[in-house]
Image (cartoon, rainbow, N blue to C red; front, side, top):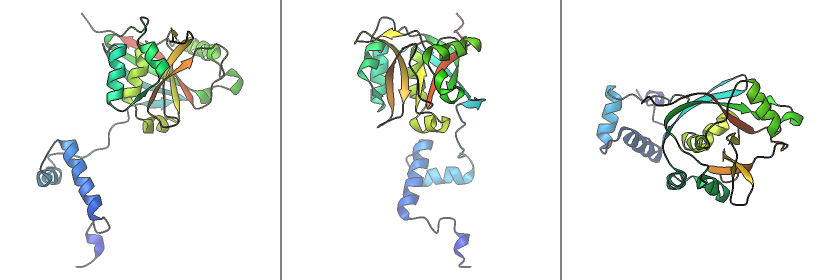
Length: 220
């Protein structure tokens, strides 16, 4: 039978098929392309969609991060090694004595989306007041690094956000101003950036504000 519909790959180019097999090899950790295809065809390895790492309810995004004791200086090296961009002021916050990493602490994060607030209410002090009314608390500054590493820009876009500002205790930057660490997919993307902690600053609707729902420390 010569019906093209019998062949699922009839409309795929050789280059596309090659890229597909190479991607399967990479994901399975297999060097032999024939073995990689055999593993999938036999059902020994199953290709599945990755589970969504966040959930959204009523304009609030929830997810969990776990710290690993990485220092600020180590975060700079770690993020840049993985092709993230770290702003100069962000580096100064990470190098501050007030940046205090933890190890093995699991934190549930709630990100309040900017769309929850009217334009006149989307200012820092009112956002913090809204978090207080929800019994949310301030995160450790390291949460910004964990968020940056956890979510590629495509997932920030899926959240409907351009920025996520981590609403930690402000840290003085190298210019003398108080700053907040956050992630940013604007411009050329993949940024860990710093935002000024001005109580009266009016934020854009595309910003999310990260607070803590709950936190579990490692058992001694």
